[in-house]
Image: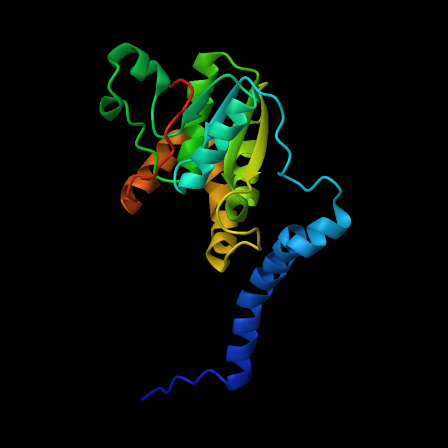
Length: 215
């Protein structure tokens, strides 16, 4: 009988360190970027905190404070329209019933891919995307990859409403690189991306991202 040698304690620690070290480095970078005290000390104009005039505001689905902040920005005349990633505005103009015009987005990558097509039809040049601060870094990376080469100026803004700003959660950090890979695949080769997403069968996003000024 052949005995399989047990993994040594040292080997287990080496494997664990190899897995956790990149995660720790990434989380540390996120901590440096997003910790409120560090942001206040080193950034006179904190990243993702300053809205810019745009042709349209895109509010990501999920937390309701995103939609509330988008409405406030529209009231300040930062943009004439608000679009939700949950609703296809072209369909809404034709049918007039929101329930028949759901985009079926399942995640942030879906939202970016869907809005790239929608905004190309809308013929806009400047886009402001509103999301939560804990989600803003991944949003910025995904939208940058998806919108690269479109000619549209996409500016990501974190809402100050809701919970106080802080570092991203461990789950948000774990999703960062998979989301970048999915964004590149969805942009360059949509069919394999759709196959993978159907295999995973994620539930569509549900949230109070209701447009306040137009579709």
